[in-house]
Amino acid sequence: MKVCTDACVLGAYADVRGQRLLDIGTGTGLLALMAAQRNSAANIDAVEIDEAAFGQAMENVAASPFADRVRVVHERIQDWTGKSANQLYDRILTNPPFYTNHLRSPDAAVNRALHTDELPFEDLIVAVNRLLQPDGQWWVLLPPYETKTLTELAGEAGLKPLRRLSLHHNARKPAFRIITGFSYGEEPLINETLDCYESDGRTYTPEFRALLRDFYLIF
Figure (spheres, rainbow, N blue to C red):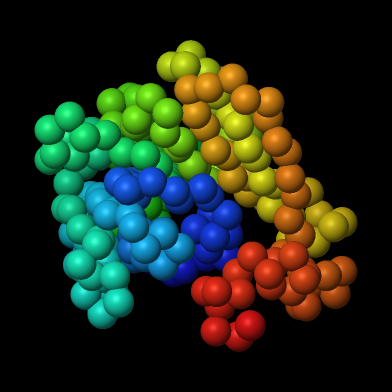
């Protein structure tokens, strides 16, 4: 799977404080590795169902400076227990599949990454409720319509949005992705916006550069 700009923004923006973090559907290991870079005290479990992606994540973690703090697990999140008795996660990060009725790719791995068959939103929320600390936070990246759907389902499970970042290609374009942080608390929702590019569509905005400076070599 390719590393996408919006996933990098999630890794740089999400709150990753805490000692135990979970990356659901780690893919290449991007979010887990970014969290490890940002939080030197965290131990991170990166769960991935696809065998090829699991192997890629294992290679990437092994080649990183954070290999002693990131554990890559080949398992369905529906079956993952955390393998540590009475220890839940302080933060959970997710860049989940979201396509439901779109045309399928001939590549089964692409379908698993992009379509909700393997991980419906209902299953995802059940897993988060099972694995998240009562005072923890869950951070997720989705398109706007799917964000609305997930927020409604999460609310039924007691998870409320506390922070939301709308990503725009530039100031004249509508939001194409939304990053939402959920918790069990009642904090007032904070809404923010990030434009990736200036109006020319090529020059990164100062805000984008500042957020990704620690991760993009071109900055």
